[in-house]
Length: 388
Image 1: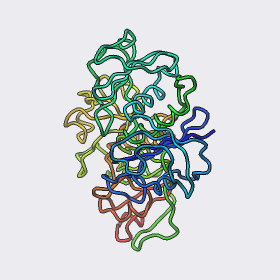
Image 2: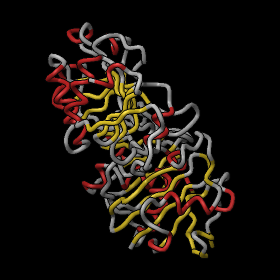
Image 3: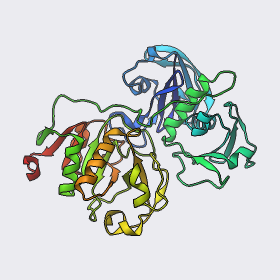
Image 4: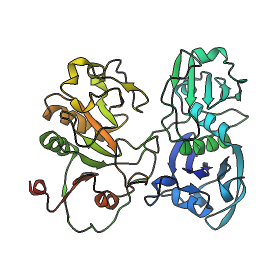
């Protein structure tokens, strides 16, 4: 059975679950280079967010209530894909809390947790039963495991003050998260939510176009070759690969890769680091595939990575389980850069728009003269490096 959750409103999103596995989570920013403030309030937009599936593939629908959701706001009967479909309505704050617990390591281990959604607190038992926690009162499990969600738009990235124990910050953008939670609540049996199997790269694939814009030359380029190019030229490259991450940002999948062994022209918003090297390069470096923490370079590395030496930076650790392509790229870059296992990274997008949905959008951007997308390198025809 496939269950779809819809989170209407600004940054609206859609998620699909089948047999406790998250098949898709995305938001309207990933459609057609939509602007950042696009609103999901039209039922005709929903089928386009389902990717390779159609509304007829969905068995049940759920809606996260949102005051800005137009025709999608209240659930009930929805016209989607030319048919009337019934949908169950849930409060958005409850959807956010449900998604946080269902995707957490605590749910997988059958442990209870306190979930903070802005000023709201919910307690989840190890069996997945959710109940309000009573203001800021924290049950005993809060000192053992804590989940936190920030206000309105995005997940918090700082440790909350409610407890000192283990904690979890889900990496999803709030719109995708609310959609996940709506689907999870609809899938619950007997009031008990179940853990979800998921991967953060579960958004849309790159859209394909048959023709290139004029002035660009393509050639095959494996991740190993891209690593040698980055190490040899020191120039930033737009990198697009795999399914997008509908997270706080799309770093690593729709982003600018920046060598930081010199001070770059493009400032790095975060860093990618091989998981096996993060403790050597960054103080208090631990595995963090979702870049939820800010780390400071160890003094012994500050002179080698001047592009990151300005202060604490978010660090996404990379390993084969989280991203095989980036792991190959970084290991090869380490080889050709004299042992540096780190690349700077920044979002690549047209001004005021969502992440690039296709190569054409990246080629129209003036942020870089080189674009790499799924093993093809594109360079401007007037770029001397394009003939190498």
